[in-house]
Structure formats: C-alpha cells, structure tokens
Image (cartoon, rainbow, N blue to C red; front, side, top):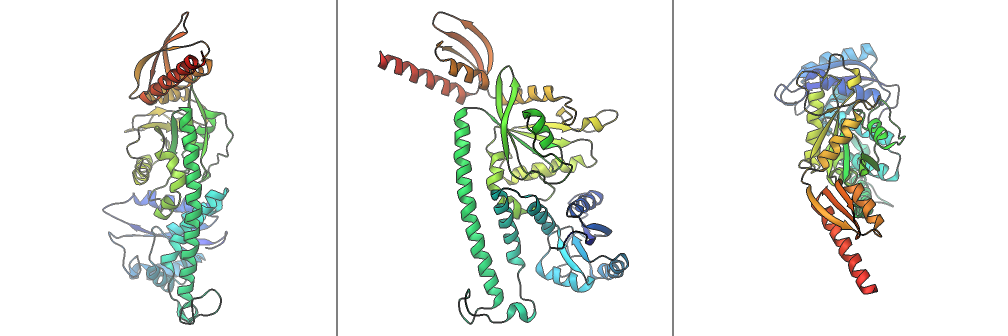
Length: 421
C-alpha cells in the first residue's frame, strides 16, 4: 500500500444495469482515497455492464488514460471494484503505475483506525484473506525453488512458502478471534440476565451514529467527521423516561458494497447487532444519495443475518435542511444529533418500538423486594400501581420473557420464605 502524499487516478466502471449512480460511486471512492491522505488528480469512467476479463476496463480506454497519468503526475491508479491478480498485472503494464482496488483502500482505512487488540486481529484477518488469492508467481523471485528453515523441502517454491505461511497465520488469527467471540457471548449472556433490551445503532459510516450515542448516553466517545472512526463496539445504558432503561450499542459503520473479507472477519463484532432487540438505523437525510445509503445499510444487515430484527429509523442532520425533509423521505423520527433536536421524540419512539409484542400483566410485589420493584420499573412500562397491606400491586406492560422472569423471582422468594419459616 502506498504512503500518504501519493497522487491517485480513479478508475470507475459504470454498470448500466445495476450499481450506484456514477456520481455517487465516484464521490464515495474519492472520499475513501482522500481518507488515506492521497490526492485525487483525475477520474476516468467507462460504461460497461461486465468488466473486461483481462484489463477490467477496455484496453482502448486505458491507452487514453496513460498519458493523462503522466501529465497529472499520478503514481497510482485506484479501481472502484475488487480486481483479480491478472487484471492488476495487465493494468499495471498498460498504465505504468501501481494499481490498488477499492477493497485494499477500505482495508487500509480499517487498519489505521483499529485501536483495540480485537479490532487489530479482525483487520489483519481480513487483510490476509484478501491477500492470499492475490499471491501469484512474478518472475524468478516468487517461482524459484526454496529450501532451508521454514520450508518443507527443496522442492517447495517461494510462492508456496508464502501461501503456506499466510494460511498458518490465518488459522492462528481465526483461533484467537474464536476465543474473543466466546468471551463476547459470555458478556452478552451476562447482559441478558439484566433483562434490559438491547438497541443497536447502525448506519452508513459518518452518518452521526457516535454523536447520537454520546447524546443519548452522556458519553464522550470520539466523534469526528471521518469514515470508520468507530470500529470497537461500545455499550452503555440508555434512559427511556419513567425510569425505563435499555442498553445502547454502537459499532462499525457500513458503506456501499462493504468488502466481504471485512464482514467475515468482523463477524464477532457485528454479532452485537444480530443479538439486538431493536436496530436503530441512523440515516443522514441531509446528504444527496441518502436513498442509496439507506439501501446499502439494509443490504449489510441482511448479509450479517439481522434482516428480521425490528427497525427504527432516525433521520439525522435535519438542522442542515432548509424547507423540511426532502421529497420521498422515509418514515422515521427527524432528529439532529448535533443540536439535540427531536431526541425526546426518539426516546419515546424507541420505548414504543421495544413494546411491540408486549402484553399487560399484574403482579403483587412484597415491600421487602425493593430491588425487584426497581428492576421492573427499568424494564417495563408501569401502567398503574397501588400500595396495599401485602405489597405493591403493579399493572405493567412488558415482554413475555420479562414477565416470566418476574414470576420466577417471586416464586423463588416465596419458596425461600416458606422454607425459612
């Protein structure tokens, strides 16, 4: 991967049948490249339904690009899609500069953003899974016969050694991530015992998720106008009013066509989304192309197995709009995470969404069970209460699993009192 300060030329294939609008595709690739500190000095687009199997874009088009690269001082080209090793070699030969694809750019951004051990392991795994099929013989250097320490004999080529070492490192990383995943599952089980519902924040990268997370929880996590600032999940308590609480989870942002290497490697982290009771989708409604971004997030949610989890849409950045929501805006709660506008409405909407499937129940809570009473008020909507000689008569609206837990605790304490007497 090139260093900062490089000059990049963008190569974009416009698919007339599927894919994003050309302007949106170019705009996002430009932002990704500039996130690495590279300067975009030019763009070439070609309308092709299928990539050229040898050169990705048409050879004639590429010959026209080559002199432009020299004229602008570009020393690398960036393709808008993942390309094969053969296409990379042919592009390099035709253009006379290094060639990287969109997947490499995204992986490098993730590598720069990773801070925790778990994040670094997942990024490295994604990078190695991407690199393994890219390895191929190149002249004598990678095809010569190898031998000595680290090889399996004099008949093993250096290319085979490199591939074997990559596979060994991938297996090691997979083992370590499995252990981290098991620990995450234990933590989730512990949270489940609390009985608090989990709300997962999702959204396109740089949609304002972390700013909203901070607003709702009182935290001060880094929230910057940059892509993929948050890679490691953060979970805090969320106050919903009337004493009710939930757990709010913030994790990695999505982008259009998120590389599958990252989706697979970050599966342990993304399980925080799949285990949620409600998905709060933060959509930046002020930016052109919000429709494509909303669709891109939904595609990733389906890919990770969260397609059936209930959704609530938060239409963020309304403070930037003049004249109200744009035509065709989807149904959701208009908010501004930056100014705090609409957040009370959003909290009420979250509480209402979590009540979907809830039913009315009545319980008598003994006065000595103050801890249980406090927990019920955190997890359920209290519709009425009356103080009697035997305890607090509660009329609540809650989920079946919460009601079963309340009944189980009451039965267990009644049993303990009877046994103790």
